[in-house]
Length: 82
Image (cartoon, rainbow, N blue to C red; front, side, top):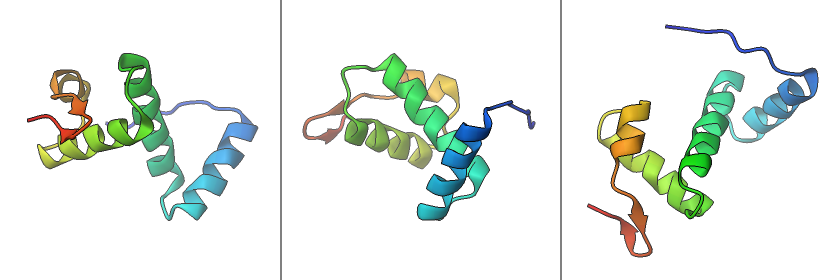
């Protein structure tokens, strides 16, 4: 399923610059920022590195829908909790 999200011209330009720099499509960059932002709101105690590791772990386990993100083991200072 695909949806349309309206964003400002400035945010679209920010996405274009970031997506080019990071070799992602504009849509992939927007989705990445939304996932990181969602996780940052859900887990404010985690660093960006820990959130990134959490996303990687969830992807390894089959995908990053909201239920999997909410039920995932939280990262520890030693790495990803099992």
